[in-house]
Length: 257
Ligand SMILES: [Zn+2]
Ligand SMILES: [Zn+2]
Image (cartoon, rainbow, N blue to C red):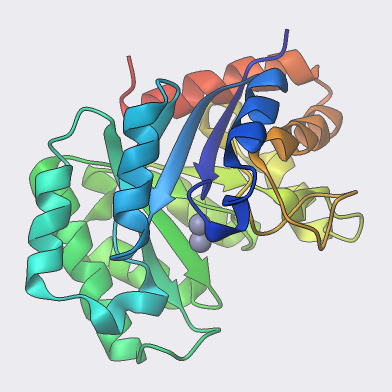
């Protein structure tokens, strides 16, 4: 049986309120044996922690999303720090920059991003990076804040090979999601082929970014198999091999033994 590690999911989302248990069961049936759920603001951090406590195979990452950075108070950073002591919390994230939405000004996003990188270095936790339309500033801040000390994941990577290479140099894993499965996704497919095998991760970002042929619909963790199939095809490997390789990578990245 194929075993898969979905390294980025939001199964606590309200989009699953009507059928969350079935969604989780379908993920299990599809071979998802490890999953990191991401809590990224005041509302989703508690619901992420609840899922991680309820299900053995679900781990948690907690952080403050750039879109919500305008709302982050000093006590929120302390809250994240306290949660990092929980045995199921494997990373700080998702954190980063999002220049697509303008709910939080760029300077606020950058300050909150830097504060969380510093916290991660102090606690020796990997970080999960969200980057939308902000490649240059993300790379610059990761470098200025010595993020290579902790490394982590570039989640749902959408950049060029040049950007990927810079992230690899700073000890980051490159995670591919639904968009790499789209037929017109030339650049992500090329990047996936160039990333060293021991640095590739797969994810869904469910309920967002459903892979082909579910594009535009609600995504779910079971569909991570579609990302694994695309990677298998591009790399000339079996889906089982991709599942095993990305599971090993994910365990190493998040320090799961
Ligand atoms: Zn994200
Ligand atoms: Zn996400």
